[in-house]
Amino acid sequence: MTGDSQQWVTVPEAGRLLNKSERTIHRWVSSGRLPSRKESGRLLVDVSDVLPVTGVSDPSSMAVLRSKVTDLQGQVDILQSEVDNLRDLVDRQDREIEFLRQAHAAALRLQQVAIEQPKRSWWPPWKSPGD
Image (cartoon, rainbow, N blue to C red; front, top):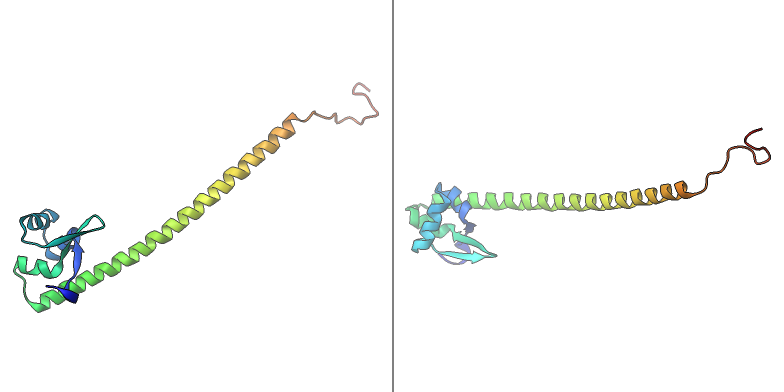
């Protein structure tokens, strides 16, 4: 099938949709029974191409599969958004950690300066310590 009826999915998604193992999907691709393409280094198969291989040609089954694919794609989008949010949080925490490291280093420098300064006698300057 061509045009808008194509629904490209990854091998694991196709396996879940068809209740087949990823190995079976890969065998079908290798044998030429199942057309595929590579996109961004990932092997994709067309759900509309998967149906004839399994003997499913009922349009209602196709609609169910397309619905499942759409749901899965929606879940992937939600998960991607969550991943982006978590990356932002990690970046913010990394910046906070760096700020705290710099503040700690500055505090250590100030402490070192205070240690190196000569100690003043707590005695009043007009009295000597033995008086």
